[in-house]
Length: 294
Image 1 (tube, helix red, strand yellow):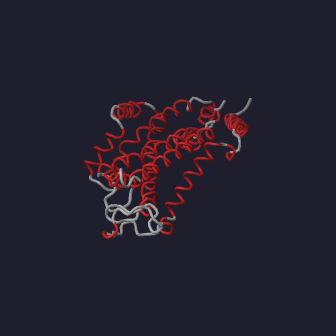
Image 2 (cartoon, rainbow, N blue to C red):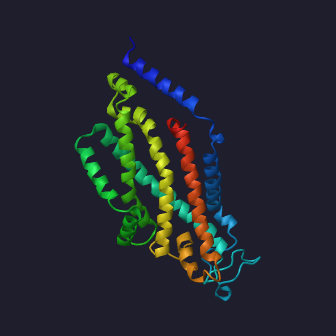
Image 3 (tube, rainbow, N blue to C red):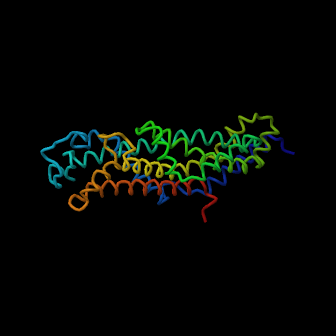
């Protein structure tokens, strides 16, 4: 008869073997490749913004306001004479930076809390679920807007507002995965082998339950970017004159009939970023969750 340690190693090897056979090479995943190309291009534009932008995004030229697209200003200028292309490029840096960083705090905090609550249960699990129910009773964007209004506009306030709302989703996802995982044979074998609860959570349960939280994180980045754009449109986002897609849409909407590119192109950039992140999330779902594939 196998010892608990031998049973644990056998189960882990079996899971690795099944996983390696069920996942096709990542480069053959169409959705994943499309997401990598789109998101990678946007990240590259954001990183190289100082080199790609032809003008200072906040420099005003009041003698050249509302200029039509030309060889000098490819997308024209806004009502303050600022180059729209330069602001569009720098806006990618701001929106993507806030969108990605705003996911980190709720991902870490929510995942840790959900894993602990799901593994140990008891009063912590009960309290967590009641808090989750309260947060899910209100729309995400409404809560973010209210919190930013309370905290004040600015990048730090956006981080705090999104983190205060988003962590519950990660806690709920990870908790549900842990409730299933802790009943598996490899966890039972680890316990019989004398492993501590912390080591079981970190070494055995964690790697098997975080995939769903990572996949959700891709769609959460989309929601965060939409929240940033919405806040910028409402005048509650990044403080002007910083270039940001939402504020550009807000500034350009009054000239939509004569200078349509001022509001339309930043809006298209939001759509492209959302599409790329959605493709990336779908691809990761196939890559990390092979049991869902047909």
